[in-house]
Structure formats: C-alpha cells, structure tokens
Image (cartoon, rainbow, N blue to C red; front, side):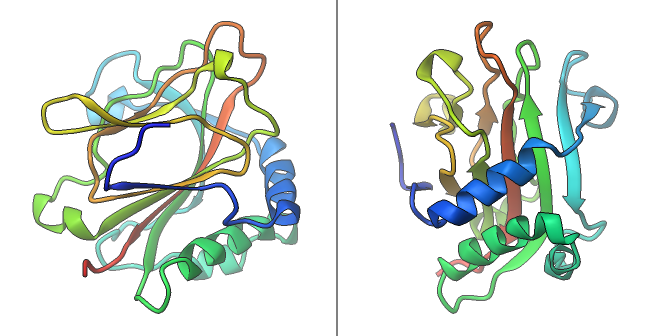
Amino acid sequence: MLLNSSVEVFDDLLSPALASELISAISWMPMYFLNRWKEFKSHELDMHWYYPIAFSDAPYTEDVEPKLDHLDGSLQSITQCWHAIKASHGDRPVRLYECMLSANTFGTEGRVHRDIAEDKVRDSHHIALVYCNSQWKPDWAGETLVFDEEGEIVAAVMPKPGRIVKIHGDPTHVGRSVSRICPTDRRVLVFKYWLPSG
C-alpha cells in the first residue's frame, strides 16, 4: 500500500459484525448503468454502475445525513457506517452532501477526476470509500489511485473487504477497473462530505 498525507486507511473502523452486515446489504442492491459522457463530457466510454442513496442539489450547503436516518431497516448498516466515519473526526462539524454506491465491472474503466470544481473549497472536501466485496484478490485489480499535480501516483490502495479510505483535499483520483479474471464487480460505498480545515 502506498499512501501520502491526503490519504488515510482504516481496516478496523467498522466492527467485524457491522462490516459483514454492510457487505451483505450492499451485495444485493440493484445498480444503474450510468453514461457519464452525457453529463461530464469526459469521453464516450465513461460509464459505470451506480446507485444513488442520498444526494443533494445544493452540495455546498445541504446536509443529507437525515436521508440516511430514514433508509429502510435493511440498509441501516449504511447509516451506522456513516456514523462511524463521522465519529472518527471527533467533535469537528461534518456535513454529508452525497452518499452513493459505485461499481466497476471488467471494461468499465474509472475516470481520473476531482469531485468538485471550486479550488477555494477543496481543502475542506473529504471522501470516504468503503470497500464492500466479501473477498478481494490482488489479481482482480480494482485499486484506488491518487495523483499529485504532475500526474504521478502518490497513493494506491487495494479494495480489501470492509476497508475504509479517507481522502481529503479532493486530489485527482480514480477507481481502476477490475481485471479480466475478476469474477465479480468492485462495489464501493462512497460518502462525500465537508469538514472545515484545521
């Protein structure tokens, strides 16, 4: 595992019981096939699978945490996961603006990107990625990569089951596609939130 100062990895932030419950719940969730070319004008093959869990039309001001609190009982492990991530920041004010499930299959490549367009607020932007496959092998690829301003890889993390990766400052990043021999999709629960710097 390669890390830099903007990336933290936690393999035990969730209890084994909660991680197991979350992975089980995520495994049966339906997915939509999203063509991001239409919205982001990135490239014509920029497509992946996703499921919107809690979104906001006003990401700079709205808090979607109450939407997680009202999820169906079978999905409350998602809410509990968020509460664990939020608690890991102590008493600092955290505001969640998006929660989604993302998936990559062989051939659906991730797009190297940033999550927000506003440079001046990047220092307060955070992402938490929760890897939600029941098992993962290095041969299956699917790494999360983070890049510096010169396009060099400064962090690389395998999607180990139940692992949580926190990325702050919105550096350029990507979730790589799985390999040809991977027998499943790569499922990642994504939380995007604001946390004042300092």
